[in-house]
Image 1: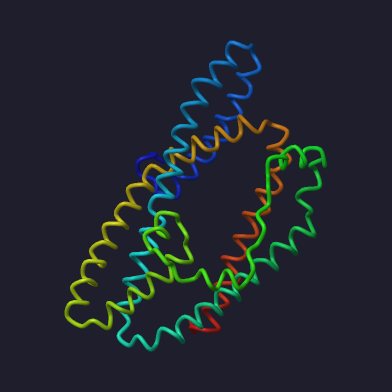
Image 2 (image 1 turned 90 degrees about the horizontal axis):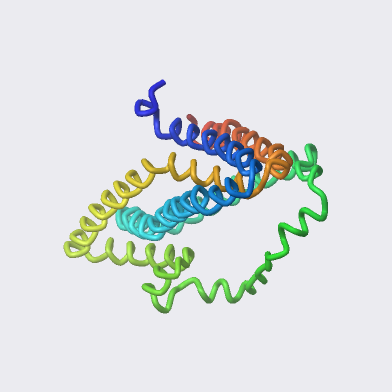
Length: 258
């Protein structure tokens, strides 16, 4: 099939597997001599790292405005703002149910297949030597920090919980303001379309970004580590497919009658 005529997801999978294979090729070429290895490290991987960082930063760039604008649009479009409470409660319950199901599936498959059994303790220690776990904040601090004292600081800092709360409160205020609120709502609706178009533009470069990411990861990680992680990768993909094809259809049948 012509690459240009493929769907976006198909192109991303081509970039994924293409980067995987190209990374293996770079590993093989890097073992020829020090000159080739130096060229690959400094030129090829250096260029790919720049492209990878640009792509990942572009994805991060749209997250906060996408969440803010879409939540404002969704909240202010409610004909009756009093319905927000029950809707939020049902959304939270559904989120907890699907999350608990996903965690249960993951633990069950991980316990049965033991995907990390091929990795030695020394490899785990070497990989985690620079990892410093963050201490979980107390529950009181989480609740007291829900409402941002400075919404612009929350937006610039990417504090998603505060951004969500601010977006919901702003949407409620817009829905209660009448004619002027409708003008603001129309602005956010237009802004939402623009943000979605920006997401579409970024996703069209996703196959190339994924290619650079996979090539860099495979080359820097090495063949042995990649093979040890292959079971983990496959297990994650299979578990996600089971969750997608089993959990969500059951919920649609039980709660939506579809």
